[in-house]
Length: 324
Image 1 (cartoon, one colour):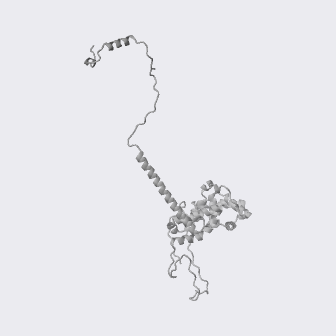
Image 2: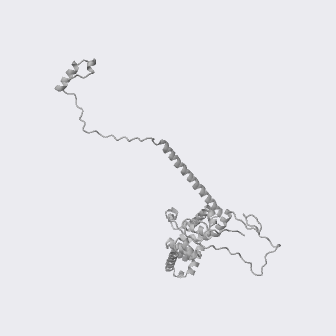
């Protein structure tokens, strides 16, 4: 027997209003008249990867074992659900793998959540419906449609719906959530979720009148999702990819920090310590008379020249000016 804890944990990013009721697993009852196996019966073989413990003690799972169990239980169906949202097989696998990578990075919080499967489903749907995929080169060309003409019509009817309406329809008629759970996972009020569901059903019924019955629509959604062979990666590959992504972003953050510190240090070492006014650019000086050539002296200039020639060339008389 595996013991699990069900206290409320923090919801994933973008799903702040999720309110779900936990569904505990009901133990299987032995049918009447069937007795428990005796000592002579063959004992079941222990599962690989789990330590042997006495039958009267609860089996404690390691984080990796608990994650692998959640992945094996949710991943195959989640890939098919995501395919109904996007109509792209590779994008569905990529979104589910990315969601489980985030779950492994935040596993202590996800393991304590009331609905770990809902946590992963909400993240996978957000990744699949991200508007940034339209800028990726490999997502610009359409993928081959389903082989069955009825499946092609239903998938085309789903893809023509707005993303919020399509998600509401898949959650309610495909996954089987009730209306409050659907509203919480789509971050909408219950009346808004009901309105989206009604308009989505009407749009699908307008294209495919035979699917006006919700039971028939539910059956056809399951058939469409099961018709495609959509496999999920191994849980060990997902956990390894998550750890490698953590190492990459950690190293990138360290390199970015070192770059900022180095640039700041270089700026402090090379920056001036005092204010130096900038040198004004050179400008042409206007209004200066042009330099003239040698010409005849005027009367005043001749008198000054004669006076300088007659004056003494040395002595204190040349130091002091003459009194007038």
